[in-house]
Image 1 (tube, protein in one colour):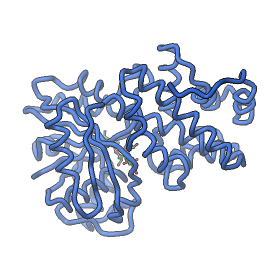
Image 2 (image 1 turned 60 degrees about the vertical axis):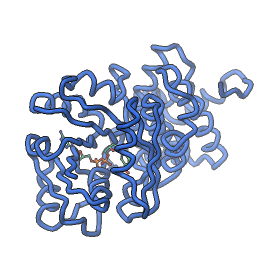
Image 3 (image 1 turned 60 degrees about the horizontal axis):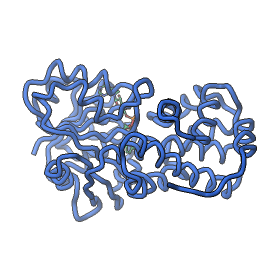
Image 4 (image 1 turned 90 degrees about the vertical axis):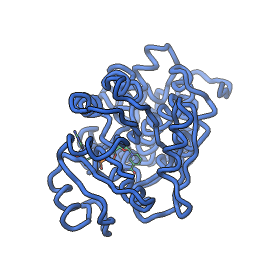
Length: 333
Ligand SMILES: NC(=O)c1ccc[n+]([C@@H]2O[C@H](COP(=O)([O-])OP(=O)(O)OC[C@H]3O[C@@H](n4cnc5c(N)ncnc54)[C@H](O)[C@@H]3O)[C@@H](O)[C@H]2O)c1
């Protein structure tokens, strides 16, 4: 089958290789001419050492990408997602299945990508929506290291279709879920907690402190997920705790790296600038803060991270604030 990927950075290119390994032809749409030229002329990508399969092509034409396939994989940073979908809606002429692999919530609206798709794409052209998420560093998947994901949709048949498109019996195993909200919330908010974990490491705090912030961070991810209508048990799965395990303590995670630099004293913009690829966690912190305010939920770690991101507190002051809170019983629901 033909498959189009919108966004040919680290993850888009890696998934293109998965899809090619699974017998599909892939067309990537990106706006970076250097990436396009390198993929088409040398079958390489600037972010990776090796060669990618030759049936992966790239283009800067959105029209071409839409004409190529009825399965559209969305893999752009979520800050440009609405703009990209708006552009797609002006060009689309037949029904497409949208598979979103980007991880983020729009801070100004608290919208998940499924909601942005529903708002921007004419329902006449929307076959359906699947969120594909889980613990998956591109750096490992590009080397075909064993990885599992979850495909979530309110339409079970579409979740199963995506499960089969992306799975193989060599290195990728995809599960299905009916909890789109839970999968999208876990995938987005784990980036916020990964930044916090990085900040703790950057400040020179120990493993105990990181375990404290990650574990209590899970409670906040659950609270956000439930406030938006998702299920707590989804947070316990691949897209929640699974992705948090992989993100919150690995130098392969650009969110962890960004937090590390903030903890070492860099400003947020300096730290973001040091990480080459997209850092979704800063916007996730902003989105989490807004959701907490809107739904009146107690999110002490995310709120403290928000004050650091906005420059109102430094990391040390934010930590002192957390430790001075009144003592509590440990409760997760
Ligand atoms: N890298 C990973 O390991 C990984 C794994 C799972 C999910 N994700 C998620 O995937 C998303 C993308 O991450 P990434 O690592 O590929 O980021 P990246 O920064 O490597 O790539 C983003 C790509 O989008 C392109 N782009 C920007 N605007 C565009 C537009 N208007 N049209 C087409 N392309 C455009 C950029 O040129 C770039 O190539 C993020 O939400 C991230 O959280 C990443």
